[in-house]
Image (tube, rainbow, N blue to C red; front, side):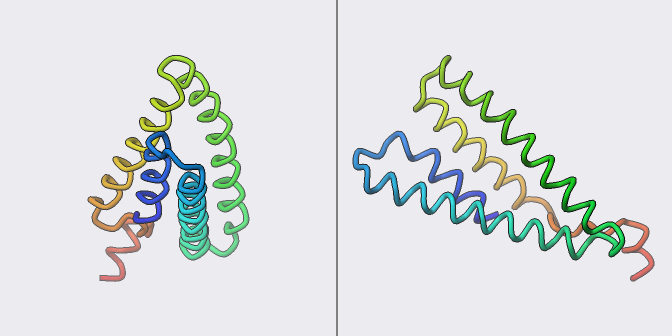
Length: 122
């Protein structure tokens, strides 16, 4: 959740940065946070999936991420055309922060154990 918020804030603050060096630091922080988030996601997927499906689950997730990356890059280009580059970056940052807040408000966001298995454990 913190990683998503850091990446989103780094993106959203980018238009307000007057110095290239600070923009580089923000992009580096955002990229680092995004990579840590992906490592955590893949680890949780690996631990939560049945052993015979782990490769398929991770492959499906990575394919979905790649498709979303292409689609949202196209949408960002359209948004930048309509509201300007700064507006698109700020909007992306705000949406990322809102997503991290929604994730933080979830009781157990990374507990993907099926409800029937949780009941059996209790």
